[in-house]
Length: 515
Image 1: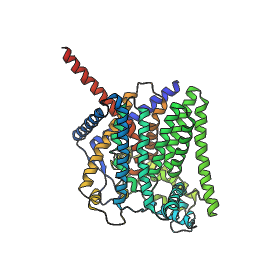
Image 2: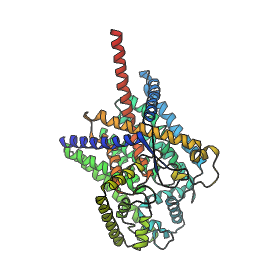
Image 3: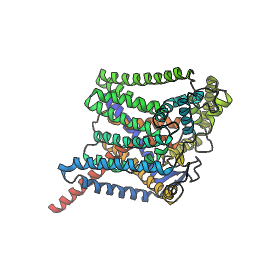
Image 4: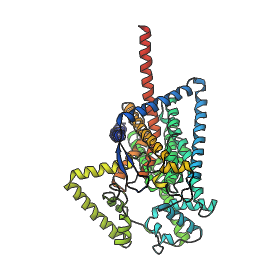
């Protein structure tokens, strides 16, 4: 038990440091992109008192709605269910209308994956080899799971029908909100936190705007949140079907998006610490089952495509290249994509993984030497890399989806380049600060309480994402899943703040009456 308590305290301290930094940066500055949408983020100062006042006003508004929902105890659960239904329906409608009106088309990596999936449907597997023009899956074989998902969608709805993917993303956004609701019910000590979550989730516009992004963000996030919900349910009830659902959902998330492995590691880590601390073999068995399901599924996917295509899959660009690029300064912010991967693997090494790895290691050593020689530069490099990803309130939801295939209506166009864009970006900025504040409060309020380690699963995943992307390639959209994972914790933290403030106010009023 001492091991579990020590782990919980260590995670809490690290989490407080991370969210203290996030909250501090968000209150005083914000990262933006120009409406020309060159991927070059820039920082702009905020007026601290204005951000704090808007967050306070938002908290008061949520609490006013919460009081109405919970005013009659016998009808509380029914009203929460009604509010849940309204939020889910609103989420679906908003996302569908946005997918229809934004007129987005896949470009870049999105287009490459869609092209590969379309080719697979027609028996063309050249993308798996270096003989094709793009060589996309030859260089990035980790995208095979996403390609398989898109191929399945094309098989059901027509080859090249990327809009079907966008509409399925809308369902994915609904699943994200609903899974977050299930997680919050397990984290919250009362129903106030549940109501707060639903109100916060209804305002998570970066998630909603990303439904037009034909890539792995929404599907992997939906499966990740479902996996977290089932993980917490299993830890509480020990139902085997919850464990099975957790393993399947987590595996799908990892196959679609490699970064989801951070969540898998969080699950395994918690089960390992729990097993050691409580001497429970079930925890080790659960961890082993999850790892086995993932490894077998990945092996099965690769074997299926090798058998079907007759092509032996390449290992792709070495992962160490991404670390080397993450330590370089390009046209954009430090650590952002600068073409290094293709240069090192395609150009300089001619697809020789060993040569590319040796080049990357040499470049990493050169970067480390430069950081040692100029510590102030190193500190500024990583400060800017950190804020350029985590302090962007839009998480590139406009930058990544701004290219359209046909004419947009005035409202949607204004959301990208007009007054609505300014208003929405301003709102997201205040909303982001409120979320960071809520998570910070959640950690403070629970620090000295005796709580099960599994309640830290979201925080562990977010901190893992922070470490990963400080080493890896940087990009604002990579942080979106972690931001959505913050909502349940933020809701519980803000709800407890409101509850404590309300208790103190009522106590003061009672004292005045007595006097």
